[in-house]
Amino acid sequence: DQVDGLVANGYAAAALHSLVSPAEQREVEAKLMAGELRLLFVAPERLVSEPFLALLDRANLGAIAIDEAHCISQWGHDFRPEYRQLAQLRGRFPEVAVHAFTATATEPVRRDIIAQLGLRDPLVIVGPFDRPNLTYRIQPRLDREGQLLELLRARSGQAAIAYCQSRADTESLAAALQAAGIRAAAYHAGLEGGVRQQVQEAFLAEHLDVVVATVAFGMGIDRSDVRLVVHVAAPKTIEHYQQVTGRAGRDGLPADCVLLYSAADV
Image (cartoon, rainbow, N blue to C red; front, side, top):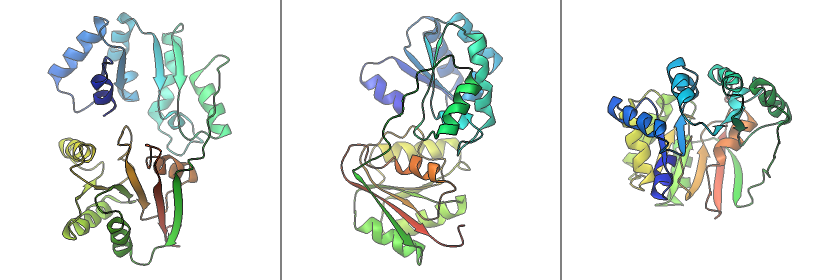
């Protein structure tokens, strides 16, 4: 989605990921080597592979930007070992600027990111966390399906994301919403790649109003008019909650973040 937006604005961007065909991959790599790309999105697993690093050795690499950088830190809420391997980039490309970005980096996480990446005297910029257009509501979960329906019906036709802890919950809740006449679909990492892409594109094209998802949904989603983010179960950490609710109201207009909690979640 980010690539689509950049290209539409005349910015030369591309992405390499598991859903890209071999022909598309060759085309992107040719553009990279010809200096026709300004920005290339890749996952850490691909970035640290030797064939891809060898490709970058021959490219005119100007900067490396690491998004979701809290994943580097063992103190982060979404630690991924693959991100640790990004430390080798400093040694491989010593003259290339390295930047790390995240919406949720506590002080220990910031220190850990700097240490793990081997950053030299980095400039650390911390922006405000307050999102005054977001209203947070916490309610006891008494009737998950009924409460979710009530919230969505109050915002009929508006964009919403409902987060669940399990894949099974996303599918059962999405089916219940569909039966109630709401344009909804489930999204989780267990779905076939083409299905996930179809759901994401339908949501971005406003053919879907509601996505019922696990935390697999949201990275790179750039729909600015999400008016409601519901957690039908408590998230695992406060950092994770802040990260995910931040997908609401990116257009600056009022939006609601509702957490339905039960003691069973804890």
